[in-house]
Image 1 (tube, rainbow, N blue to C red):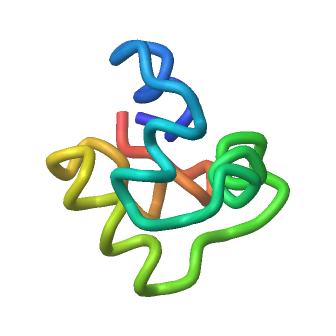
Image 2: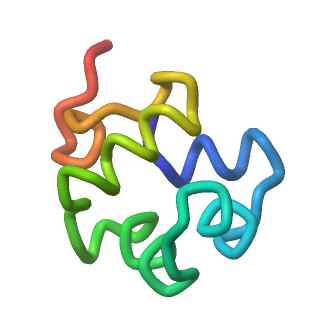
Length: 65
């Protein structure tokens, strides 16, 4: 599941999710659009905040089917 899909499915804004992972809203926006890849610490927080639904692989377009 992509970050965009996760946020849409859970009705979360970039700002809401940014607060949950202790990041800036613009960072979440860039991650959501695929403009940047998350650093390791950020990815770990995303993984935990999404209960493992968004994985590092999802950011590289190689999501398991």
